[in-house]
Length: 313
Image (cartoon, rainbow, N blue to C red; front, side, top):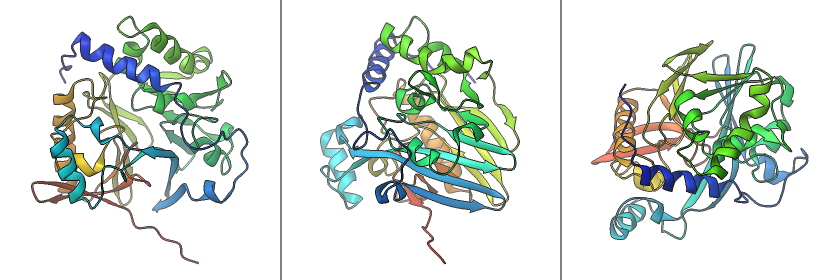
């Protein structure tokens, strides 16, 4: 697969935005302990797929800036209204996923981490950090990798961390601002020192029923992770979409954070088309919580339908 052409202006702009986000407080108050309250419980959903359990965990939400989308204000407002929302009611989501499959205990992306996000506090109330065997990183933006460490130490001390090589080398290389380069390297450092850092350089089966695919556009090495279950595939597609109300209805619209907007749109259209023609599921880092569901064709675009919530005795 050929690499997209990223202009230096776009690269530096996106990298700077990512670097600035490292210091963003996310969610409500700081969550340093693993004490669970009612609000914490509201941010977790468990789904069973045969012998596989997928847990969706909210890292917290905030107001969504509809101007994030690369389209005219009028077009964005039109699409938002069609989704029965207004620009003032749009919410920005950050989702982390945990999968228990056989002997593997897998986390996909890590959110902002303890103290800035909510997901890991919620996750560690249910599982011990030392039981996580693998962490899969779709790309190296801070809302996906900041949870790798806590107070400078590995948050998942026994885990192997799998990350796209192209993304890792870009965000720790000379093409990004020094602040971004340094912060990215620090998040991965404990795992590299322990020999637990695994750089993915080709589409392949990683382990068990997990495989990796490369779909650059949002970042140079943006990856999807595909989980094959008894009930079909689940595609964990990272940042394939940021504003669901806009980008499903019109997948040609990319976001300001997409480093190659045209390539990101093409990858999004291809994925949505494939999923709409199958029974496979989509899981995304910024889709409306719980961030996992089905895609169907709807009008000239698509629609995202979250999985039904079950609360049976």
